Image 1 (cartoon, rainbow, N blue to C red):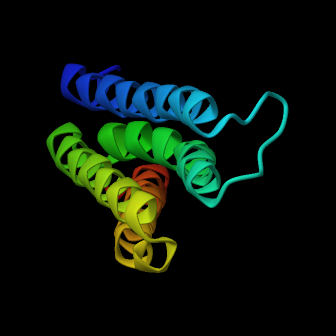
Image 2: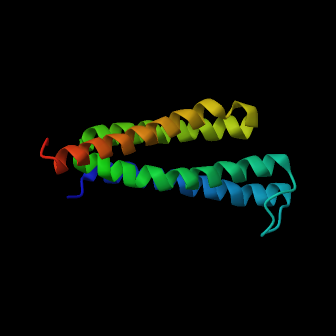
Amino acid sequence: MLHPLPAIVLCLALILYFVLTANVGRARGKYKIDAPAISGHADFERVFRVQQNTLENLIMFIPGLWLFADYVSPLWASGIGMAWILARIWYAKTYYADAKMRGPGFGASAFLSGVLVLGALIGAGMAYFGGK
């Protein structure tokens, strides 16, 4: 069954990704980086890496969110998902400013994705073995 609250959180995560992608387009114009180039100015490269890294993280986040919502709790999945979005915003802001400062936001979002996936695994295991 699909749950509306995690669906809203997922849509917000996708809107965040859209904004980060639009930032890459703006940075291309600002720093005069013609497609398909992805290098040439350090400020552009940071904007590009934020977008790419967020895409890479969505691969773990999206199924983790849905599976956690289904096997554990849609409310908790949504709360963890919102924290993930805030961590990705933190990551983006710090990476844009100084690449050396990106670690805490990255670490927080990676941890939260791990909580979703591990929680979903435990919940699915409990359901499979009759513990739910």
